[in-house]
Image (cartoon, rainbow, N blue to C red; front, side, top):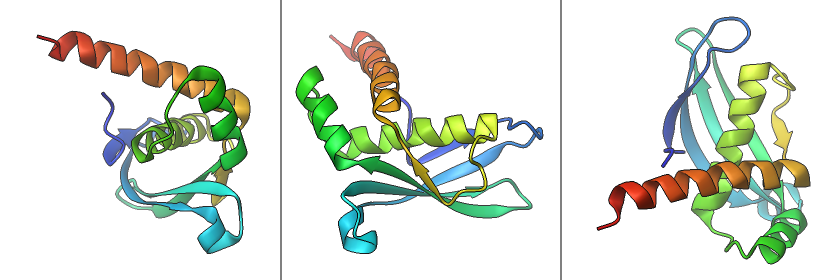
Length: 127
């Protein structure tokens, strides 16, 4: 199972690898008046340090959870956010943005990767 609290991303298109630390998960309504789950990460490559907030729209999370039977949890949201951040850094896509919005299609795509991790974890740890 991928660790969303402390991980590395890269190399990015510029050849840099980033050390990433989970900072917080918070509902966006409380800090930005946004109906979302915001997941904040701190990134450091040894010479540069930045923070990125991955924005998961609550309506899209609820919709996918209802269709897929997935239970919404902090760990699931954090893993979705980790996968979005990895995509942005490794492709330098929207890298200049502080807030990275996850689309409904990405939620579905990232959830498929998480289900694969979960299945592998169960296989390795099942008695």
